[in-house]
Length: 344
Ligand SMILES: [Mg+2]
Image 1 (cartoon, helix red, strand yellow):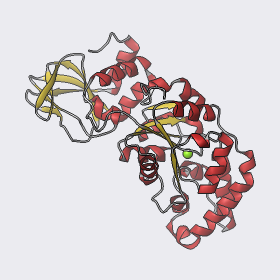
Image 2: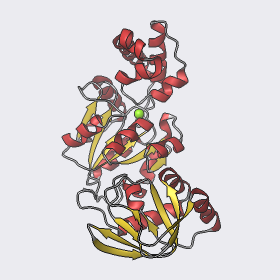
Image 3: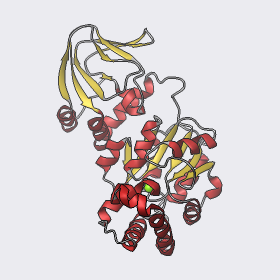
Image 4: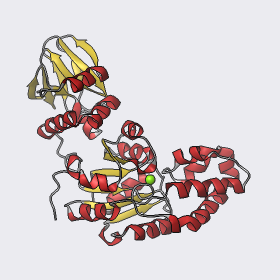
């Protein structure tokens, strides 16, 4: 049931929601369909069925359809109105925003989802996938600078803000994305080589982000696999991880050097999770590309502000929570999908 919400929160829920009226015997939510909205029931009753079996009957003040949004996967149940119903429909982006802005709302959603059905294959997270650049190490601006110089070298001017916003996707995609396919075809490999060289020259200025090593250690102390999925090159990623420390605590990794589709494709994440013998993951990243990749696998996402993307963009892309940096995430680990995974 809707807890006693303070007026500010109630107002926020009303502002983000759209009041809808649904006739009796309609399906509000259909099992195995994509989840785009959650509903707070205002009046009338509904029943919740999984494979035809009634699991619950819900009424005014209850939250409906949140599991698909929280878990980022297809609907796990069908919700049918038993009588005319009015409800506040909250779109996925607004739902994520409410959770981020209002801890009371977030706590309520987590209470409700813990109690409800999760399909047996989907349930618990067994793997944490860490991005490296911008997530564990403060290397974003060095990458921007190295790419800008590389483009300069072939006489192509790309404003740095455009490069910044493409960082996090694989280098194989970045050149075309910011400078056009013609530049990619004519100079792609040369630009990538110049970037790698330029970045290597700036690498001595890269530092681990606050709490990065402690986060890796704390995660590996839990009953969960810890892997890396980095769009960066193999050796570069290895050097950066040496800055962080805790390489020996990782269960597996994948990098942009492999013959795999890079982020925002899910292949790097998929490879790292599979190598560690995991199935269901939470992806920790700093760029929207990390969450586009995570969402395609139905994984959870945790965003960090350390890559310069805004919280709203990370939430929109699929992050469920956003924290300032690794230290802030570490302090709030029990608010995330990693919650409840016991110490090893
Ligand atoms: Mg990154």
